[in-house]
Every structure is written in C-alpha cells, then in structure tokens.
Length: 489
Image (cartoon, rainbow, N blue to C red; front, side, top):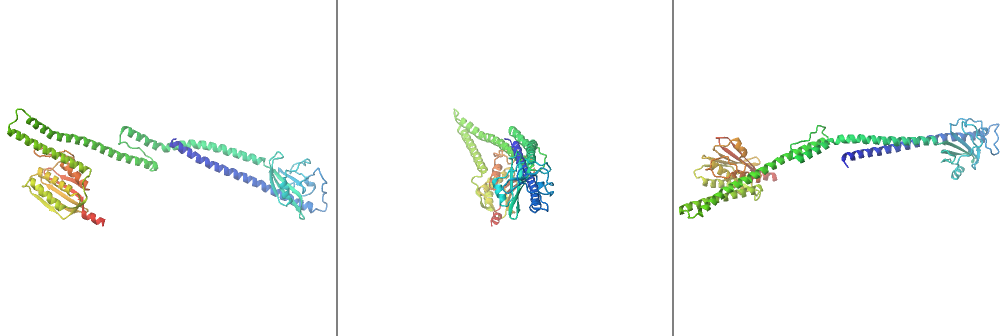
C-alpha cells in the first residue's frame, strides 16, 4: 500500500470518526431536547389539569355538577367550568381515572368528545406508584401510536381521588429524528467520499516532490551520475529539508565517487609505474646473466663489469622494494608511535648522516629546543628524504630549522636550487613523479610521497613552497608536545 493511499485512508478515517462523534452528539442532543420539551409540556399540562380538578371539583362551587355514576365516561368539562381543559395544546390526550385505574372522563383537547375512548395504557407498577402518591412516566405503542404518557395522582385530604393521564404522540418526533439520522448518514457518507477525493489529490501534490526525489535517485543509481541534483523550489519545510539533505548527500557522494575514481586511477598508475621500475633492473639483471652464460665466456674483466652491474641493479631493486614497503606501511599508519620527540636530537642525527652524502655541502641548523609528538624513526626518515632531495637538486648551502608555532612545531628545509613551477608543485607528491628529467639524478619519485605519508601518519602535514630559480622550502608541521601536555593538564 502506497504512502499516498495510507495518508488518504488515515485522513478519511479521522474525518469519518469525527463525523460519527459529531452526528451522534447532534442526534443525542436533538433527541434529548425534544424529549425534554415534550416532558415539560406534559408536566405543565398535567399539573394544570390536576390543580383544576382540585379547585373546581373536590372544592366545589355553589352549584357543583354531579359525579357521573359510571360508564359511559363523560367529558371532563361537565365536571368543571374551568377553562384549563380548553387551553390544552393540540394533540395532547387527556384521561381521568379513578384511584383503581378505571376511566372516568376522556376529553381530547380541541376535538369533539369521544365517549368510546379507551383509557391510556397504565402498567401495574405505574398504578402502584400512583397509589403511593408519586408521578409515573412511561411510553407505549399499544394504541397503534407511539405515546409519551405522564400520570399524576390527584390527592385530596391525604388520599388519591383521581389519576390524571396526559399523553402526547412521539410520531412526529420519531419521524424528525429518523430524518435527521438519514440526513447525517447520507451527508456524512458524501462528505467522506468528497474528502477522500480531495485528500487523494492533496496527498499526491504533497508527495510529488518525494516522488521526484525517488525518480532522481533511480536515475542516479542507473547512470551513476552523482552530479545530478533534486530541483526543489518549494518552502523550507520537511520536504524542503529532505531535498536539501539529499542534495548534500549527493554532493558528498560525488566527492567520494570522484575520490574513489582518482584513487583507482592512481592505483592503476601506481601498479604500472611499479611494474616499469621493477622491470628495468630485472631486465638489466637478466641481460647481464645472459652475457655471463655466453659461450665462449666473456673475458674476466668484462665478467667483472657485468657482475658489478648486476650488484648495482640488485641494490637498486632492493631500495625500490624497501621504499614501497615503507610507503605501504605509512599509508596504513603501521608501526608509527605517538611519543615525545626531541626535534633537536633527531635533526642532528639526520644532518650528520646527510653530510656523509656530500662532505663539501654546508648544512646550517637553526633549531629551538622544542619537542613534538610523533614517531622518532619516521621523523628521521622524513628529514633524510628532504635533505637528500635538497642535496640532489642544489650545489649551495641548505638551511634546516625548527621552532614552536602555537600548538605545533614547524620544521623547514630550505635550499637555493632551481625551484619548481606551479605545474610541478601540484604533482610533486604523486608517486613515481619526477620533475627532474636529468638521468644523472637517481631516484624513483617515491621520496616525497613517502615523506607525506609518514608526516600525515603522525598527525601532521607537509607542504612545499617554491618559485623558479629561487629555490624551494619544505614545511612540516607536527603536534607540539608542550602544548598537548598543557591541554591535558
């Protein structure tokens, strides 16, 4: 069942329940009000007739009319000259009974006298109640008409002398209530039917943006086009917030999808580059081995050169594999501890080893007494990579410094080399990328990617600032031990 149908049915059910409650309350109030009105009318009429009998018959005037000896009953007007009986409302039926329930008189207001009239129904319980000097209400359909009957005992000198019955037909009331009930049922049914149609239309209009979002999601899933967005121009209500959230999610998915695509491309390029770098020394080694297997054998001095070439290529292959292993571990943040590091000590060691590569090169240290949080061996590896690159690409002095910058430690390696263009700067951390095309400068293009992975694995960041013919400066930021300890305390 669709949400649209469920909403429409729920709306219709609530409306139907409301109409049922309203109709039932209206019917009940109307029935009660009409019944109360009839009861008030009968009470007024009955009390007036009972008082008239007391005043004019049981307290007779100088010329009282005789009491009829028995059937047939005579009109009550012959018992009294009072006009109370003539003032009764239309359709009010009056019967006067003796204390035993026998008919004494049977006038009908506004109608000719009916000497053949029968007494109104009176149950045994009602007669007993009247003998106990209490009024009695009852309804009856024994005469073929639905009647409301009010029985009043006429008490004189402590005894019940007459019983006055006042009745009125409930037929018109029943017909009016039946008409009201039919009207409420038909009107309620038509109202619910119309409301169902209106609710169906309104729910469709309300859910149309959600349907549009669903269609957009289906198209995106089918075409993998994360650049699409939900076009919603309505108010910023729940649906507007849903559309905005969906578009934000699509933006993040697009970024993630593009990131995955770039990662896959980099992975493919990486595998291709690794294959190329591995193939070169392996091909050289295989060719040299083939030379050693030649018959007749090569001269001894040539064999020695070939073996030297094999050793050099093997060393190169080992360095490449070691670099790849370091890079893989750095990517996975493996074996990187987070401890306090004396930057001065690590930098002294790195500079001492770097000077072994070029004893004529001047390396200037400008180091404050600062401590960073990270892995000591990883930091030393990063510094060796940066110093090695500076030695390769420049013949002038190299400056390395370290200082506290807020809650971080800044390490800078500056050289006076040829520098790099903006195009090269954007790719300098790509794996196997070498901006220098001079074949005399050895390397695999993995130094800076390894340095970047190691720095980020320690919670820091690295960047290079450079201009053509103005050298380059590599900046490394690491968390400061002193700032972190102060925050903990």
